[in-house]
Image (spheres, rainbow, N blue to C red):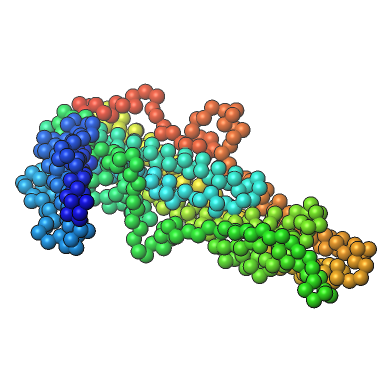
Length: 539
């Protein structure tokens, strides 16, 4: 088959896909030229006719643009230039896209309606922000399992308990998102019914911190406006899950945020081991020497005292261990059985990721304070049994956000404590290493001299070497025991209490449920029982 024939075959195999602005409609053009249109459930209920037409048009134009892009690329691949095939640029029509949709002039609404709309819009933005908080927690809080090291009885426990507690914090963020969306749905619908008109209110997302900012566009429902119409069932928004199941959201971390950027450039400690046969012999016929044994490379270390000690004295320690293994003493090896398990930990990685969780706690505090202030303002304009019921519901929501802030800060501090204790164990190992390395070197030299001497088999040269190593290992074990006991109390999930008591949401650090009212929890949704206050402000 010639080049031209292959080109035409590849053109015929082009499969183009276009997705609408808000993700409601997907259009696929197959290689046979047929179009497949997929409409996600809920579009007709949540979008106006003009918005439905705009979504379909946007998806079709996107599919055409994708086909043109692939076609141009084939021209470049086969002929070196796309000459004669220009990029496809859709021409906007009066109803053809997000930019052409007009937002409501809220200044034309009654003042009490403006108060409802303002509060509802802010809570919708809070819902999107809490969805972003959940993604932020899962990403930043996802401490690599290897960062906890390989300490027996403690590393796996810390990793497991951290993951459990982090999962609870993520569940709480999802609960907060659902409650804020419920408020936004209810109040915006009440406002639209009260005014008897469609509302389309622009969003601004003005409250979030620099760490959370890159995650905000990934929040479910993120968009440029909040829409609602009279007699509807709440906000007409883009679907909560705008991505396909296999899509991976991309977080773009801006320059200058070094600590957040560090989560993308983590190098965890690792070892590479090479085993070679141990040979004891003499190259000059006089002094015996040792060759072979375990050769281990220690890479991507923390650069602290322990890392420095191991790199400085690795050969000595490995030679000692090779002799102990050859002698079959059964002695625990100071480097390979003890020190390396702490060396494999990455306290800096743990500390940075744990400390970044304070940004989630700060977001809870900031948005709660804003909501409390706006609630006081809303109460100036509305009265009635439903408005009073809503005030109680909003107070419960505010108290819930205080709990979530506390839980997020607790997890952040526990992670930092764990990092500090791992760092303390590493420093203790390094200090003991520098303190005893001289004695170990002397014992090793004495052993080699004794082995090379006459009648070495009668002098038992191994005893002094084993004694020196045993003393060092005992010091290391004592240091490990003290730090492991301290770390074992971190990030506890209160297992025994969970078995003995019902979960009332006040125990330990499991997922905190939203406090529900026993009676009348939905009374505030009755728009007919919201009454404007006669003494309400005029502005």
